[in-house]
Length: 333
Length: 261
Image 1 (cartoon, one colour):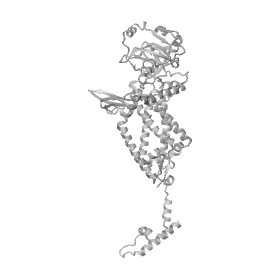
Image 2 (cartoon, each protein chain N blue to C red):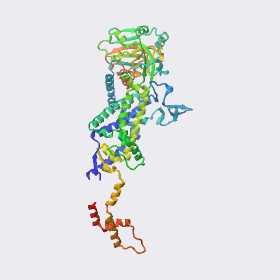
Image 3 (cartoon, rainbow over the protein chains, first blue to last red):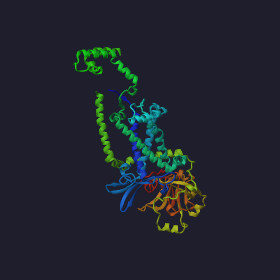
Image 4 (cartoon, chains in turn purple, orange):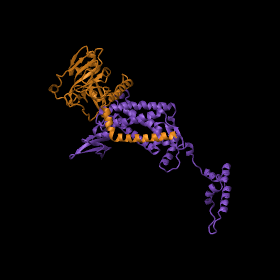
């Protein structure tokens, strides 16, 4: 059985779980903040008729329904978006109470959570990054041109259209792509688009909202990137669940991971020549011949039966009749 | 062997944790967060982020930066007049009917020369015009052109005493319970060149829904700091003695005093 290996250091494990909590709170308090103005715009200002996304409740013939307008298309999202059924009756709210922090509508509260956990996310991320940069761990999942070349093969492998994984290091090329984009694109972009909504920082850096296409565009991008994090989290959790949940969870809680097989050996491609050699080596042709002959002599076939094929005789003879011959063959090999 | 046993018990533990987590997520999540939201101690922890935001953002901004100014083409077609409905007191309506001729801005508190200013006197102060973006705490933005008297110039005239630290704006508008709106900024923001007491919006007298006759523009802060319907300015050393003690109508209800983000 393969051994336990120490895979995640203390700092990685600690920052991983703090990060998980921070991201969950940031997402949910962010939706609370969004609910205060459940529309998304492009540019610098929010002209009512120019919304890209708009979530609302509307009363029609005494019936209140929730609608989501996205790029001019209307979706009836009653019960989830726009209108939620609560114990006290239908309530107009963009995102439902069970996914916002706090659950009741309170923008000030949502902001307090968001900024506190925003700082936690940043400080925690810096701790992880600096520590793992110093011990050069982050280099292991850095997406390089070489990993880019392996991406198609990795996709084929995941789709079960290819037998061999192209993975030859601790992280596979798609993992590298995912982690590198979260580190280099998603995280900086979500932080900067969030900060671009700050009038104080916009005064210091007039270019900040401009790089996103205006303050309202920064808000839209910030919202979209939050769902990018959600998507990443879903993918991450899916992989954790499908590649040995208990083992994965143990390694992120205690650090210890059970290797499925020594990596290099398991991933060595099997070439046709090697298969030929195997066939020849064990046992060699002469011994197989000898086995077959001995077997034939021991149990003479009935006259009406054809001679057994040498291959059929090989197996029983192998173990039972001539162990010493096999031993010798092994020594030779 | 010991390792394997440990592994199994951990597995049970993990399964239990996952189950508990799922239950928490499905049923108790909302109650859990709502409970924390109502826990004063916990909320005071969350509120610590405000001081960090203020210090870091002020440090990054420095003192000589200006908010982005836009062009006439950028001015919003729709500018939502948020906040309380316009005041309906007899005095306010009479002042409006008189073109604000009898209206006075009362300046009081820690100043050398307490004084009242008429709108004409405010207009005689060299004005500043700026096309800026208004960012509401709710999330929307709108662009308008504002003209008004720089607050720094007004403060120059009334000579704040050395101990004065904040400028408090007392307003005429009230909420549904009759509570007057009020706001405060510190002297650093008060003397910023783009901090003005605006009496014109988009080249016309400030409309009643936008705070006639006088409103604050403090361009490094969110909309709720931009007090409308101003009737008095007071300079103080400390905010705790005023109303809820947090320095503003919304601040007393949990919003940040530092509204730079």
